[in-house]
Image (cartoon, rainbow over all chains, first blue to last red; front, side, top):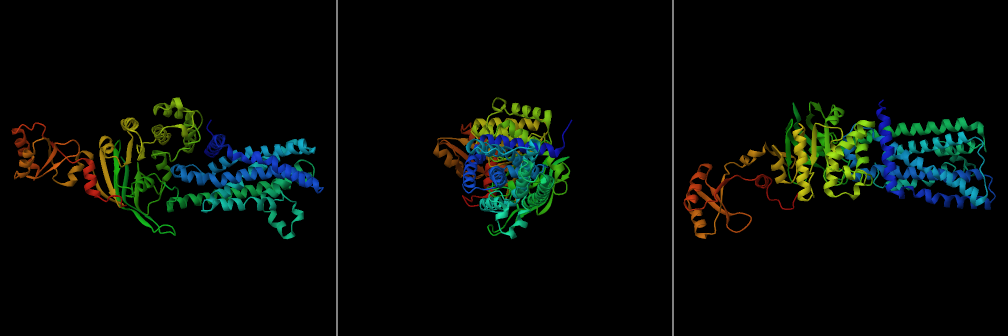
Length: 260
Length: 317
């Protein structure tokens, strides 16, 4: 039985990125640095007697997934443009946004390892065990986080292509997003005027979802967190599809698909 | 049916902050017949690649129309993409970190292939281009010739009837280039149409039934390869070998000869230029009567036609 074209293209992008990443392990450098972040964050939190230990354990995982997704989102189209693959892609009828999404999903999925690392660092290094009241819900929350990261990064991928200084934009979308998402310091410690902005950042809801899914905060908010995470992610993907389609059109009109 | 029919194709690259703007194509007409191998010749920046990109829907024309097997590239690009394959020269377009097989599986999926059909197609093409034994090795470990064969397999993954080859043998060693040309002949024998953008005149002469020469975005010549030299008018010559300087001087003085020039290669290789095509016979006869049995009629090569029409511009673009 033949699969729908969108799924074939998504899977092809996913498999391609897995193969590329296997030969380019530097793309997963975040997995190496995540335990260091966990150690630093936990040391600081314990030193000051923070009541938000769960935030400190979840934070490095979210940072890892977002950083890895953002890195591929920023580089995938740029590398393909220089390498001539983007021009050849325009000669096919496949959806560029689906392929980019498939490629980012591959690294987002790999980035989930950072959550496990963070959990292990907390347990082995600091004797802190994060309770897992609802393991199935935690797995669901992790999946939603990975998908949300990939969807949001897909929106940014085509936006990055409009800039000649994409690494500047890439950097500016890392720490500010961590702060707005409340994964470095609790949102409650930030000025009130930031709070509405935070609610428009999917990481804010993903972090809340992970905390609540673990059953250590407000389990009754899981539905709201899930809905908001998925809603923002789907909205980002929809915008990404539209933007990428316009971007493809612009490449054909302006002849800027390649440098060769 | 005509494989490709381009009429009055124009393409202007608009002025930007970083680019002064340029007319890349200016009213280009081109016809690629079914089952034909057609050379697209011209210097760097002539507009060859722009034309190939327009025909393969990568780029939109500013004016004019292009049909590929009856499908308009602007109005029905999806239909065009199903029947067209594009092959670049060099490393561009391949994912070099991954295997040849992974490259083909990816690009096959982009053309709508999937599952067992896609795997079989990839295996078939890897076998066909002689890469089956290295199918699972990273492309970055391949030689230039191997990469080019993979490019060809990539261009054929969806079994297109029309192929565009953009300088496919650029940088290849002679053996690899010869193997590649044999593959192109095989493709033609299967009824495929091939548009070959190249700088290699010998390749164009060897492979192509028709040549189109473009420069500054305009077509200077479009003719059957065998008679392309007629574009230069009356150009029959007589090539001969002689170490006798007095004899060469005598040829130069003949009333039906305009000049004698030394040919490239070893000493003693000469080319007599008759006043007209009718003067070839008397010149041949004159030489044979003086025991110059190497004398033979010749026509300008495609390279000479190219150089005469494009002009000696040196490194200028």
